[in-house]
Image (cartoon, rainbow, N blue to C red):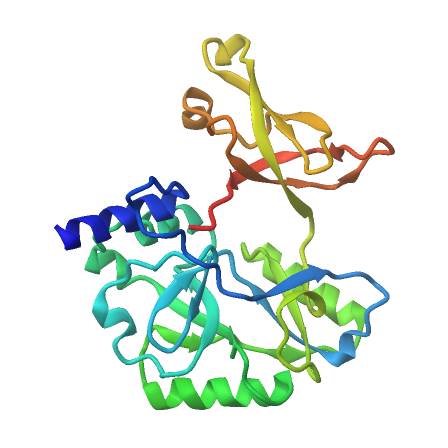
Length: 283
């Protein structure tokens, strides 16, 4: 019975719903969060890496947890030989494979063959001493000693100018990547949103809550034409671009948070050329 309740608690925890009989909601681990890159930042002070479109996960030395605090239901062998120190990184398969990755890591009963495709790419050592340059060396040492093929350190390089950074960004996005991350070389470990960590992408993204639907017309008759969503500031707008036929038949439920992409804001504070990306899941 105890095992049954534990399993059900994990399931509802991943859904963000906790009935009275379930265990307390998980506590989300504290993490460093990226600010948005702007041209006034001195790029020579930063290490640069690819921004991987994966699932954020933090290893506390004993367990692997999602950004929202829930346990990652990984096979025991996946983490069996991880270092006994905190690690922060992304579970990742390949560029353009987020949906497949998400489906795999959400399964309460892990499928070994699917997890064999996943890597844990680490980019930070929570609470470690020294600046980021020193922590890169520490991460490399830990991973080398662990000798686990799917445990890897994110490659970090330097750039000499904004022009070189733009060239790097173009190369990554043309190859199907999402963008770049910049981590200040002299920064101690911090948590929360800070300019010690920056993200750079060819588009902007944000979150909104689904509050309604617009009926489809023409070939989308009988399906959802667009989502009506609400920004944190209360402003509402519609998103129709980026919705697959499957999503138009079964759209994200009312109240769910989605991530969307856009180019810039209008003078009224609404996103131009908004495009649906995915349901936001903190697991």
